[in-house]
Amino acid sequence: MKIKLLALILFLVNILALNAQDFPKGIYMSIDEVQNKEPSLAYTLLSERRTIGEIKMSGGNDYRISSTTKLISKKDIKKNIAAYSNGDTLFLNCFKYNIQLHYTPVLKHGRYLFFVAGISQDENMYNYQIQESETSTFWSKVGGGIGGAIYGAKVAQLRFPYLVDLESNELTYLNDFGLEELLAKNSLALLKRYREEKNRNDIPKSQLVLKYVDKLNELE
Image (cartoon, rainbow, N blue to C red; front, side):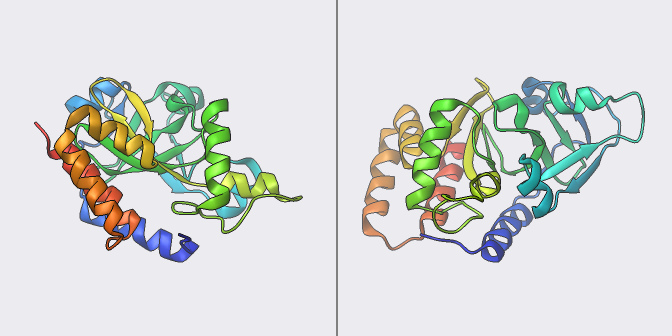
């Protein structure tokens, strides 16, 4: 299934709008602080959406976080900060999960943080995602294959769904296999229901995935 760029952007904006977050404004230095919703630093940072041109040129994720004070260094923002909340949106540092540089907004939260980000820099996952992007652009900002001279620019724009487990800080690439593995680990009943709904093909894949992200977060 292919999703046009505008449709994808509107889809993700709607998710974000419907999932207003209650993470207090501030800088989160660890995933434990995110889980506890207790930022250790109260500084205000700037969040800016990067342009498509910037992403094509240098890769990385969709949001640049910067500071107006020397107390928070570029190195801290790049490597040390786990997440930043502006009071409305929690931005996750993708560098912490080997998903390139820069930040991405968390779209759903509970035990599991759901977000969409660039291609992984883990070699095995990278190769797997490249293969999947050739046959499905479900979450991708690039339509069609990625061969040819503009390979790098197209790969830079690819976007994939992920979950982070706040209890273990483990990352899951949320393709069908990843979702089924999580469901099997947490609830065999949910796994059965997911497979039944998936086989009926009466719910768009994007909606079905997000429905079961919510169900995972509703589990005790």
